[in-house]
Image (cartoon, rainbow, N blue to C red; front, side):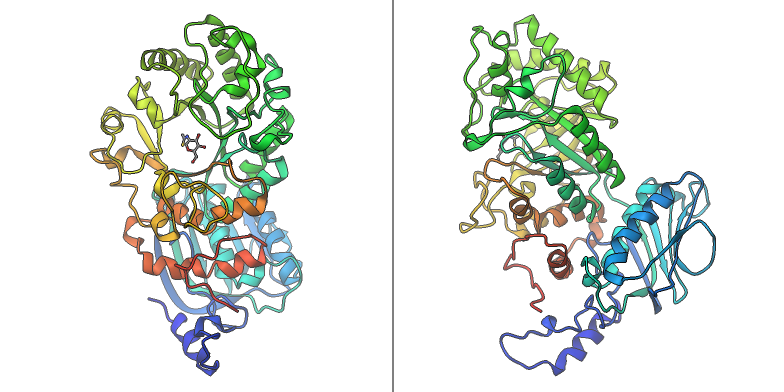
Length: 533
Ligand code: TNX
């Protein structure tokens, strides 16, 4: 669609025709410094609308980042952009509120006509020889536009040492808005605990692809990971181990607030999950009175599921639930609170329904919207509830019925969106109960039509969960998340009309050199034509 890629490919014909040297592996591949700049439509997620124009903009040593808008949020995005660009360019890139028609301009114009259709998260990026102008109604739009701009610069922009450039961006206009409001990623910090810095690193990676929800799975059989003042042993005892018997850990309230703050600075909302009534061994081990027989079980470090349950008939259970939800809601500025509800195999159906009937109103009492795994649709989801689907074929009638009755859906089909599934039989990490999930399998489905008989309007978005039974380090997180996470992010952001595996696999291939520059330990899927230089 855009001149540039073709030009780059033909200039690569000087490369030796050896099996070790494909044209895309030469230094003149789009996106490599010194080559034609990356065409505007070569980003992930695919933009909603692209109009290329002649010319290009080049960052220079005297480029300024000009921010406008009254409340300082454009400046914060400008400062973030400057921090990304300064190390590799070596330019000073001052951020200024002085207006001007040159440089990189970040304009926050909540009311201007012509930007209304951009909504809260959309942006317009205009590139001419004189300026790059990003326009949005809110800071989220500017921030997402900055992520697009990063991808339009050469991959070496992501390095932390000075690089030669040149730093050119193709001319034209991108106008971009998300398809879905919920574009989530879940991290299981219970099976293995991940510290604040590891979570921040993942947040930075999620932000690259315009993910806007960070769902933290804070409790499970193997560990309780958030300090609750009224039930202190949840964290100190329930958080004291993990799968395999390591030391585990938990977030203090200050730690959790720091994660929330950092996520917000990257335009992500934290969605905390406390999984109930099953997946509760860590809590049951911490307080004997939560057990129906009054006996605390030992801590658990295996990987079985479905053996634990809160005691539904006991009143103390609801004191516990009220305290936990009250404290967690008070710590959480976002609207959502996830109460789990999956795999309650040790809870009778009757008890499950009774439990959910009592607990959902507690979430509302503390001002939050209920999110639950889709088994909640087998009980009585309250008005406004959100069900997170994790089945594998979209055929569950109770999910479709709930959707018809107003329950909104976040889609995480396990055989598509589960980042902990192995890519193939040789993947050293992960599980395989939902089958192998290679890059194409992960990308090639449509959230709008996935759940049989659910109205398309019930779909709030998509989410990629990363369960951590087999994962302990940031490189392991990255190996499972990349390249599948960007594909799920694209399903959440890009219009269905742009969906095309053959096109996507080439666009995502161009992310490889960026991940190399950022030291992201991605899986080199054989389905993707990675540049090899
Ligand atoms: C199912 S998905 C679970 C988790 C496991 C995961 C592993 C869901 C709601 N429950 O407890 O960690 O499979 O893939």
